[in-house]
Length: 372
Image 1 (cartoon, rainbow, N blue to C red):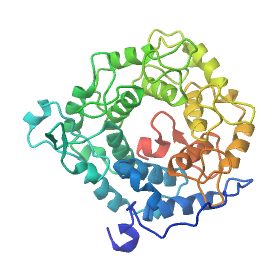
Image 2 (image 1 turned 60 degrees about the vertical axis):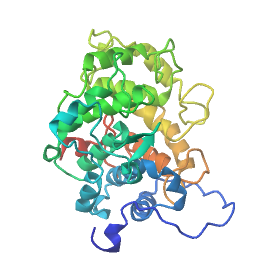
Image 3 (image 1 turned 30 degrees about the horizontal axis):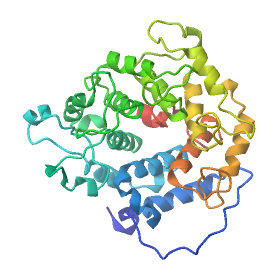
């Protein structure tokens, strides 16, 4: 990194404590691009101390910041070479090709602390590579223009196969964890970005996804679980990335390559927009900024965005926009990185002037996805 500006890449800080019970931020009546650029640029240089507990997810936080700046067409605010060096420093490499068969995953760690050896039942764990961190790492690298063919993709893909389970699901780390659609999506996105599907069995993955569709049309994280906006996005985006659904999904809903019940999925998704114009993730839940992306991107992938009341959704999102820049989870709440990113992504889907269009299924801008 060169100088204080470049050394600020998402390092945690320890500033003085803010005053107790700060007043809620005021919402703005228009989309204020410059405030959002300033907010994310500030986060790029120095994360507030509130994020210290999220250190394990440092790469994910970086993805929100850098992809958000890309949506805002403000990547000139980051030092791209410094970003590349920083991200690549989290990759785990096998000592030899023989290690690729030892059951470990050789992807990316999520943070500096996760690179430290740890112990699980007195067994030393040297490798904490994680599927979600690997997805975020590759997405960031694509955003800043790094050529992924220059990296050791064989180690990632070969070792990733050991994470796929007999039912087609993926666990995120070789020592075991939850197995659900989130990590199947990460695996599909990793293969797509590396342009190599040797890292997974797509047919098994498709069957797992289809088993997650619920009676009401939405998708749960696991078979038999409650339909959820985030899980539904992971299901549909994965099917799209793997080539099982195409552009004209609605008119080809009965095609044998899909087998998902698209009509009931559309019905379930449309019911998620509620009276205040916002979108909920599940029935009987309040509207939440992030679901404007999860459901909006799902509808967009299905070619059904025309059925969303875009004016009402935009009005709701503006009530969640902070005068400090960024977005809160609910109206009048303080902004956070997660909801700020998905608020910006939602405005991109709505066609806000000055924002780059998204590759909905990959979660980055079209320019980043295509390398243009």
